[in-house]
Structures are given as structure tokens and as C-alpha cells.
Image (cartoon, rainbow, N blue to C red; front, side, top):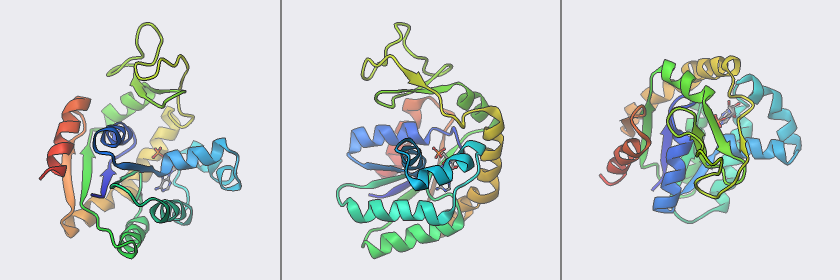
Length: 214
Ligand code: AMP
């Protein structure tokens, strides 16, 4: 089963993708994570995209399509969760072609709906464990009082460089200009399912599960 999690920054795509990986043995393909990894390891591509990402703009279609193509040809097992990809119509067309070439199909596109005020508040409050990547949020899921990650016991937490109000405004604008047309695109294809992304994490997970088990 291959699915896309679609929604603005802060909608909770990464959180839900991590749960699906654990519970259903699926493979999370997050282009944002891949790009951050390229930056950390200091590759040429990583250097190229650093400023663009920090500003909150989208990197080129060519780069992200290349990243996904590499993963699709490399990994065969399980289903894929596309998290943060596609973000443009060109990327959506490319994904359709890549899946077709690999003899695979797209089973559902799950739109996670949230209102914009909630997004800004969520993003400004979020952090992750520096060791295992477990996500936290000062409001909905604070770091435990003993300062240790509930998943791995790690004690270092980090915030993303682009999780600041200015870059977030750009990311939201990019979402509405370039990514939100995908809602209509997948609706027309008959693939779109919508869940309430503002609900509690477990309730959102339950809504997604009911879509997948349909
Ligand atoms: P994310 O972790 O999904 O919020 O992505 C972080 C940043 O990486 C975005 O603000 C973009 O600069 C870049 N990025 C991630 N995925 C894509 C994509 N599919 N297309 C273009 N840029 C992307």
C-alpha cells in the first residue's frame, strides 16, 4: 500500500508517518528529512539547498524527484508513505510516472486539514529528540519533566532552523501557491481522503487507519 500524507507544514505528517512505520511496517519517504540529512553530511546538494530551506522556499522539482526516484528503485519491501512529497503538480506527475514504472500504484492521498492559526502555534512550539527523532510539542506533547526522551531516554532536544515565524510564513505561502492545488488534482483522480489534523494524535491516527483499512 502506497500513500501520500498531504498538508501544510505543522499538520502532523511526520508524526503520523512515524506511527505508520512502527505499526504497519511501512517505509517513510520524507524529502524534508532527506534534504536535512544531505545538509548534515555536507554533500554538494546539501550545500545547494541550505539557504533555500532556511528561507522556507521550495527546492527544485529536479532535486526532490531525483531523491524519490533513488529510494523507489532501491527499496522493494512494504508500502511507502510519501511525507512532504509531492509538493508541486510537476512532482505529482513525476510520482505517478515513477510508480507506474515500478509496477506500483497509489492507494490513497490523505489530506490532513488544520487551521492556519493552529499551525503557527504548533510549529513554534515543536522540537525533536536529537538522538531518536521523537517529536515533542510544548503544548500537546511536552518533553517529560525529567528531561529525558520517552522513547530512547536521550537528553538533547533540537528545534529546526526553519521553525521560526518568518520562514514559516514563506512555507505557508509556498504551500498555498504550489502544493494546495494537489488537493484538487487528487480529488479529481478519486484518490483524496480527508482527516481532521487538529484532533489529538491518536485520534488522527485512528482516522488514518480507518482510511487505510477501508
Ligand atoms: P519538511 O520537512 O517537509 O517541512 O521540508 C523542509 C523543507 O525542505 C521545505 O521547506 C523545503 O525547503 C524543502 N522540501 C522538502 N520537501 C520538498 C519537496 N517535495 N519539494 C520542494 N522542497 C521540499
